[in-house]
Image (cartoon, rainbow, N blue to C red; front, side):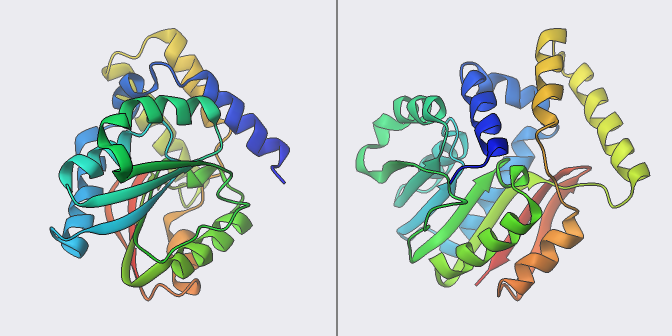
Length: 231
């Protein structure tokens, strides 16, 4: 059953579906590197072979499109519980035909399926409660085939109030420098209040507890963090 918080998140992101990607480039410092590292991690694992993957919180299909273009033999199931986001992704990725399929579902409350070679996610899992994150990491490990990879392009909480305040100040400075207008700035701050981020240290611990002996941070710029874990 979807929680009240999850329903609030769904409404917030459905409302932001139009124009979300254009704004995301301004809201994320080092945007190309942030997502590019994820693609490089997949390349290290799958090379140029065919592989099946799941995109948790597929949103508008941004990360899935990058993967489908970079890896011509990849297939993806995109999972999201925001209908307007799914609609946007379906329109965007229709050109890839059967290589891309969708499931309208709350990945925190539904079986992931598998086995697959890769599970990816971008700026989604940090909305879950910490207990749900731990449970999800276990489900991801179970859904992966041996040798499979989990790449989470997400964010992490500062390890102290002082560090978290510095993260927030740097992010706001980056948004101003990127030219984010006041209305979009205010909307981004409202959505940020829905975050339930955890420290990168806690997330690495939970990944290892889930069975990922090989869990690491591949890239980080203040709160923006690329996690990588192999089964």
